[in-house]
Length: 323
Image (tube, rainbow, N blue to C red):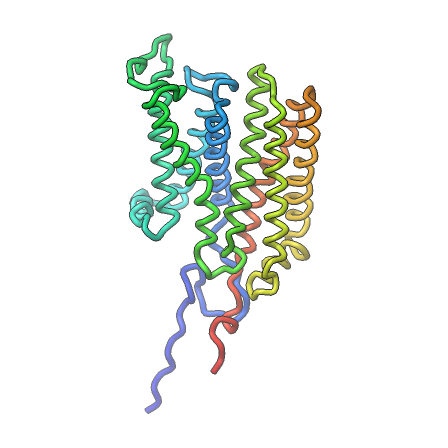
């Protein structure tokens, strides 16, 4: 009697059938791009303002620096999007239980550490009903003493992980060649930091503070790095099965206008030119900072969304040679 043929099941959790042709993933979507964008900008803003000591120049809200509050809200909102996407709270609990191998677990833990350390840091400065109920806490919200500095650095390290891990979540697995590259987290980190610098410039302007030349210069340098990372990633290994289809979709296919016109030209190259002009023309820095922010925020989201949409599994025949 002839033995029954062995049933061929799905090749991974993103696919619901065995296929031979290249297959686009359908799990990571718009909500994930929003989650990644919020995490990057929230973490990046805390890094840029605190690392360079700019938190007092942007004004305060109930005693806390506006930049800190925006960072906390952005990362908390990103976390809520993740929880909503998981569907059930207990799935979120399981998601944080595997930090040894999972970047989602590491990132979720970093979210909690950042919010915990960051909120503890600003508590002594908090004003409620004209009083400072936590003013007796033994550290300074401006991190001018040992306790405050320790909390600030814990929050900074956690913010760095938060900013980095979103891209690394995609880059770690090998299943999708376009994602499996150090250039994915590099692009997203550079996008986050450049957008955060633009947010800082606008906040300073709104608070009546002058905008120093180093800030648009920093923004221009980050955007130049982002352009280089995009170009390197689009050309390096472009003939690899799977990545070839991804690059084709971005450069010549259905996403060409959104990627080249929206992300590369309007969302990266143009802000780069504007920020370089702002570094030289002091009086125009606030307006240029606002213009670059208007361009960078949607471009940052589009960069992440398009990266997700061109996540393509290579043809199975390239992975399983016929004998």
